[in-house]
Image (cartoon, rainbow, N blue to C red; front, side):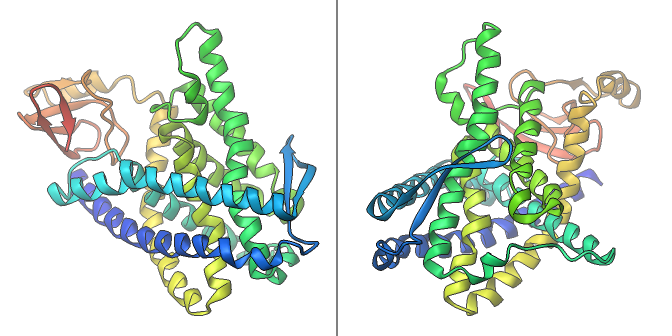
Length: 367
């Protein structure tokens, strides 16, 4: 049963990654086009980019104007391009190579997780809005959003994709985690401040929650209180990706979330295309919501410390183990105790998911 559920999840993940590739291709195309598109508006009095801090509500320090704002916008395009290149190198290429080699095998990949968590976030946001409508509450949307010209959306949403990750994830997550490790005597590279710790312990988990809370609170002045819940979950998603893979991963999800309105504002055909894509992603996101919720619950429960004892009772003829050679986690339930089925296959003791492994000369790694 566990193996079947895992196979379904991998198929849903594959479909999601293909749809995310479509979204990213369109968004990057419009982002590069925007460098030229915004030029005629540089001297417009509204050509402004806010520089602010969040404590926890946004406090504007100054505005970048004119040619300075355009210089910053050009930097944003470069920063997003670098993030996209990193995603391609560490995520897109390895994911499809791994998938076509072993479609239903376990894989730990940044592009797959970005696709799953983006879909999860869409699903959860739709559920919140639907529930609010059911109870008779119409979610408040800032009136200025619908009236923003295309070039103003380009400035605002590309800036938010990068800048909000810096001031919430870096300041309230990356730096505090680094300081905790530093003052506890652990040797950690300062580059870890930009995320990419690779694992989530109780230290990272605490600051992911704190940064998500600040991120959610910062949206209240513009969106009202209803926005706190979906934005908090979105902050958890971004914080998770930031810690697991680095700031480029959280920037990419933020970019897809915000900048997607630009092509829809420029060409009405994208409203239909992206509408269909987002609905499909939301359906897949329901499965990912269950999967990641189980993993989160298992993490909060301490990953079931009595699994070894239970596995020895239920499967006395099989050898169960907690692998020391890899950070193996069951993709279906988050379990960490497995039993060998054969030389290259293990089974999760908790849910029965079958995971293929491959034995290289130098190390064992997941297929």
